[in-house]
Amino acid sequence: MKNTQSEDLIITINAGIMHLTLNRPESLNAFSPEMMEALINAFKLAKNDKTIRVVVLSGSGRSFSSGGDVKTMGKKAPLEAYDHIGTLNELILLMRDLEKPIIAAVHGFAAGAGFNLALASDLILAADNSKFALSFSRVGLISDGGGLYFLPRLLGPYLAKELLFSAEPITAEKAHALGIVNHIYPLDDFQIKVNEFAGKLALGPTIAYGFIKKITNQSYNSTLDEILELERIAQASLITTEDHEEGVQAFKEKRQPNFGKTIEKAQT
Image 1 (spheres, rainbow, N blue to C red):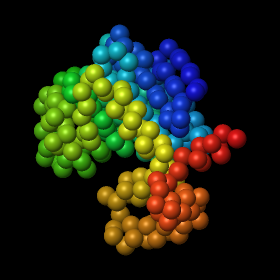
Image 2 (spheres, rainbow, N blue to C red; image 1 turned 60 degrees about the vertical axis):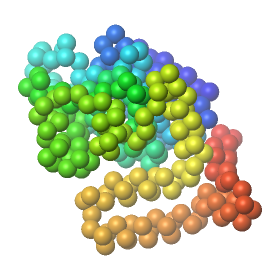
Image 3 (spheres, one colour; image 1 turned 90 degrees about the vertical axis):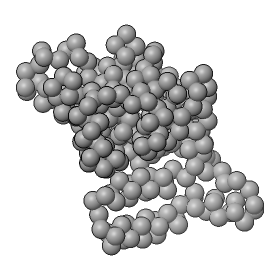
């Protein structure tokens, strides 16, 4: 197990899972420049470290993240705001391009850019006390952090605009019904359930997951012909991998595949 703790982000790496815990509980894990830079560096590490197979994003204290720090709003010049959002954009693009699953483990509030950070992940697991809000319009702003990209693709333009216009929070149950949240768990068992879910993904075929993520993300902007060709190219590559060999062998031997053995090889 590897542990790294900075002022604003706690990083733990264990059994193929990188846990990133936003660590500004006194401000409901509102974003700070230091937190943003730490997240960027963590996702760069996740890209390059073969032993990391899954990333889990969570928040310390009472909530996942309240997003932008309202206390610092109204104090930035336009150029400062432009640069700050540029840093956020770099983070969102790193998350999109990471060819490994990212799980957002949300409890309490996921608001504003905190909500969009969860949307930029591949899966959202929510505690039953969670609430989600795109609160930008309450302070006279539009959504940043990719919210105007992710939400219309997920919900369609009309419902997305309603949530963005109203800025009203929705419950975990409502978010699940809308397809935003994958699974809801009781708060008391939340960390255990998240670890179980992430552990299963960490033992899965990481290279195949990467192709699934990349091609699925391109599907909204591609024709059927283009997706078929991407599938063709990916499949031709995947049949040469150790994961495919292990999967076929496990099927023949009527056992569960041990894709996770590649973690041990990467560590040696």
